[in-house]
Image 1 (cartoon, rainbow, N blue to C red):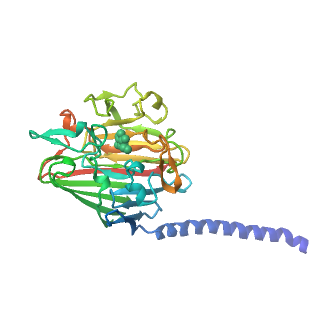
Image 2 (image 1 turned 45 degrees about the vertical axis):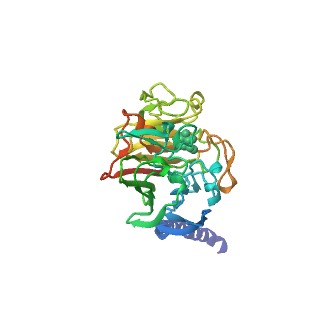
Image 3 (image 1 turned 120 degrees about the vertical axis):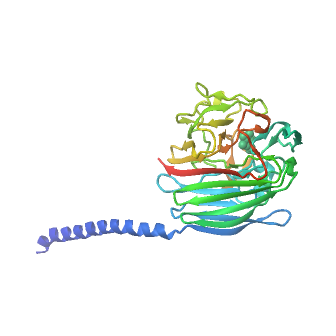
Length: 388
Ligand code: BGC
């Protein structure tokens, strides 16, 4: 009997196992959806320390229901971490930076990691320009030139933060009033930047500014990305596509010569996907150039796509800006120790900064960067994450 029961028993056991397997599978999907639903979109505010003058820096952690996480602090309106999944769902922080405020306020340790740069992102030759017949002299902080807003740009000031919510996004709104004469710029400029983390796995950055005197304005975001994870080697194997047929060549001080040169047949051709390292050896100093995006300015279109083959992470950048600066982390040289004790060596991160062209105030042929009273400066950039 026992012997005879054997096959029935094992068939029954098998049936139970199979049934529980299938019901488990069913249950797995149902609660998974539930669990995902349970990781609600969220905004958490914490202290990120104090500046030497005693003022408190706040950090806002934004989470979407897929588990993506972005942390933004009010010093420099800086994105301090951005966790996105790889193709197996494993999260990694894909932006370079520091664990604490000390690293960010130490100029030698912070080449604009994750910050908002302004009032004028990128370079203005000799820090000088003429507007409506008046010559202005800005502070210089990059050899003879003005870079990223000068000695104390928007990356080195304290912004006012406030949580914001929409149906399918959580965010932080940051405000800063740049005073007339600050770093040499004319006019009181009130700037607002909102970082949104959306349910569509996007980090969306919107910008607005108004002035009471004509002034150049060019705002951008300056994260150093490594889609394999911050500190996880160089970015030379990342495959880059740029929606740009032209770029603006530069002189030895990285000031555009004024020429708009086709990329065809040059190492600057990223119109079809190419590893960042494929031709970098023949680019003196590495990539640090403004690319002229197709379709002019004002329309939201894809500017760049980056794919990291090992993790499968993909980042697409959409913007309404006319250009994008592609910087391959050439000046990282191992002297910066960042998050989790990671040492940032040459090419350990890349920047893709949607913007107007460098030195536009001195290049009448470039799209204008002048904002006048009564006008509103607006800009929008979307970083969309997926895997392949
Ligand atoms: C510029 C680089 C500069 C870097 C600052 C980039 O936006 O293109 O030339 O060195 O910012 O770390």
